[in-house]
Every structure is written in C-alpha cells, then in structure tokens.
Length: 422
Image (cartoon, rainbow, N blue to C red; front, side, top):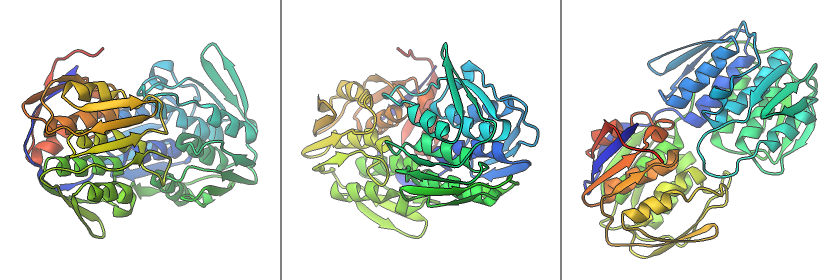
C-alpha cells in the first residue's frame, strides 16, 4: 500500500499542463474494438485504469502498446468475448466493452463490474438499452451473457442520463441495421469526445452533447488517429487546491468551457479567475468565502466528481455552505475523514452542511475512493501540520503522479510505501 505525507500551509504557484481525460480514454479504448485495424490514440494518461482496460482488450484478442502518452490498439483479430471476473471487478468502466464486443463478435460474457464504492450504480439501463437493440441477456450465478445474431436499430429512452449506458448503446448501435435514437442521453463532454472518435472511424453519429443522439448504422469501421480531450476533473482539482491555499496557478491544455460551473463557484468563493482559449489562471484569496448551494447533477449540472474536493475547500471557508449530492448515494464517505482534520460538517440525508473553521489540522486519514483521495489531498495542502493519507492507490486511478504534479507547484508532499486500508 502507498500513502501521501503532506506538510500543509504552502500556497501553490506555477504553470502546468493538464493530462488527458480518463473518462474519455476508457470508452475510446473500448471503441477501438469496433475497428478492423489499428487505432492510435494520443494524450492518453498513464493511469492504473488505463492499464486495466488494456488488459481487458487483450483478453479479447486485441493488441495494445503504450509509450509517452500514445496508445496503439490493433483490433483486427478479435477472438474472445468472455472477460475474466478479476479484471471486471477492478473497475466500473470495464462494462463498456460489452457494446463494442457485441457489435464485433455477437456474444459477450462478463461478470458484474467493480470499482469505487461510492453508492448504487446499477447496470439495468445498459441491459435494457442493449435488449432494445435485439440483444438476448441471460443472467446466471453472477455472470451475464449477451447474444445478438444481428443488432437492430431502435428508439431507446434512458430513465436516467447514464454516461456508461449512453456509451455502451452508442457503440453497440454503430454497426446495427437501421437507425438508433437515444433519448435522455448523457451530455458530458466525454460523450462528445467518443462521438468524434467513432465518426473518425467511419461511424455516422450526431447529437452528442444534447439529450438526443442519433446513430445511423454502417457496415464496418476503419482505423483512426485521435487525441483525447484534457481531464476537466483533474483541472478542477488543481484549481480548487490553488484557490484554497491562497496561491496562483495557470493550467494549460484545458477547455475552459468544460469548467464553467467550477470556475463560477470559485469566483463565488472569492477567487480570481482569468481564462483564454486553452488556459485558466486562478488566484486564491486570503480566505475563501462560502457558497449558498452546490447541488450535483448530470451534465450540464455540477459534476459529482468535483463535489468532494470543493467540500474540502469549503471546510475552511468563512461561513456556512450547503452541498447536496444527487448522483451517488455513497459519496460522503470522505466526510468522516475531513472531520478527523477538524472540519465541521453535518449530514442531513443527501445534504452536507459545512460550517467553515479557521483551519484544518493534519491527521492520519484514509482515501476511500478516487475522488475522496483527491479531496483529502486538497485538505492536506490546506491544513496546518502533517497529514498522512493511506490507500492512495485509489488516487492513481484518475491522476498521473498527483504528488509530482503538486510538488512542481510548490507543495510539500511525498509518497511512501506503507499504510493500512480498512
């Protein structure tokens, strides 16, 4: 196990490029299974989740190689649609290979996916959507088998705008006969990125970024070279950390439009923000102010992935803030750890009432999931004294060497072996 040791109280300062988006990389890697040739994907972050997805692709007969942010995937000789349970259990996004494998092989067998324990994330929307395309779904003893002799376009309404279900259905429908309309589709920027990549392969998809996506089936897909978008959640983490420590940083290789809600809340909290075509500068005040309300929601609402580290910053704001989590029912696990550091946070059902304290103090805490780990890292940067964060392997799932990124901005943070995870 690994841990972070942070000596807090130092403002972040400097210039940094933001790496590629994990939440784009994983579905685009899965989409490469639809290609009859070799795809070259650039700006791919060196994350543990990317390594796991590459292993999953290779289980199906694809060949993947990675060097210096560039991933080459050869899917010309797929042979197997059965993914081993240990790989499926390593991350939630493993399930998005079902759609493209069905399109290529006509049969897929998987187990229920794993990943961060942040609440209920049912796969029923995936199953219902794929069934509408003509897929037969059989569940037995923890495994799920999908069979489709010929995928057929259909009108599909999602009861909830699930990102994963939207991606899976899009990829399955690309080579289906006829037209598929996905209504109440997820609208995240990563959905747009997936559409752009699939169209580069030869797909005919329109509407990503709106609540209705149209997929006109094609016979087959070719190869492509494509660069994924920057990671808006990583950018948000760094912006919040800089504002909360009273520092000034400039992030490059970002898309400011993807961060409008985050930067708007930071301005409300007293930070100064300046943006350009592909950069953002943030300067934090001497002490942050509170926000009346943050309520998470599917895009274009406030991202649930940003909620934890905003909460960490609001823990030292000069006033009372309310954060309401409406996406995942288990996304307040970091609250107990923040309380160990002196935060005054009370929970009322889905709402967190945060009464800002003058300062946090260092403590031994545990990262319970990816974004909780980021939140505790932000808290450690704010806190007086030394903070030790255990179970930082969770952080590695979404941040490339976060400790090195922060150290380059002036943070006193190091990574060591050891620690205990509950």
